[in-house]
Amino acid sequence: MNCNEYEIDIERTIYLSKLLKEVVDLIDLLEENDPQYRAVRTILQNICTGLGVVAVIGNAIISYQLTSRGEIYWSMFSEWIVEKLPKSIEELEEVHKEFLLKTRYNVYSLKYKLRRLEKFYGSTLAKELVIDPFKYCPDINLLVYKLSRLFQADTSSKTMVFAGKMYYYTCRLKEKTVGGDIDLPVDRRNSLLTITSCIIKTCAKDIKKCVEDLMKPSCRSIVINVWKRISKTSGIPIYRLDSLTWLITGILKTNNYDPIQSYEYICREIGYCKEKLKSLLFALTSCAEDRN
Image (cartoon, rainbow, N blue to C red):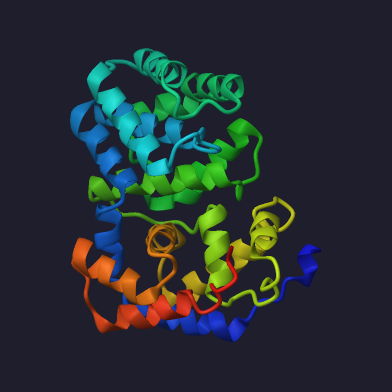
């Protein structure tokens, strides 16, 4: 299907914005229960803060096409870093490379990823962050822009904006003021959620094909613009909205897109049991019947 053939239900985005706004207090709980957030916290608690922030960004820019779930990958990475306790940016670079070479969590395009690490760790940006790790918290966009310039990538590319989101986690953990309006990292989860929540209604016959299309550089602006609209209407910044939608999609998938089972899971495991959450979960799964 051509990208122009995907129809967006604007009224649906307004409705979802309202529902999301009513459970905005869930975001804190979801973030704190995100294994990636806990991995960042482990790193920052155990090594020099500047090196920890650089390690998080360095790992974010190579976190794609993993051979394990992202949650496992980040947990193992944090354990590796803490065990090795690097004392300089040079040591950190070697420890990071060693993690890739000696484990099997991230082996796709390994040579390219190793070169990407070399470029980042050798950059002025990385050295600057070691000295002033939270310089970009008030404007995460600027960090994403500088990373994009460094790697000659689009500012909306998944790894660039994902690095911005993970940097947000470091800012939050150190209680820094955060600002900026980065794009959503377009991946399989939030592409699927755009469909299962009925924002895009032209995918009933082949949801899998639609998800693949929406993840392509030529079409990802559809997903970005949809969630940017929802972010603006709900008042929830993208870097926080992504945490909520990404984690909820994982919970929905675990519970076979059953909104009641998903609600009970969140209530039991995270301790959020407000009735308004049910309405959101039903809305997010209204068009999930043919997702497979």
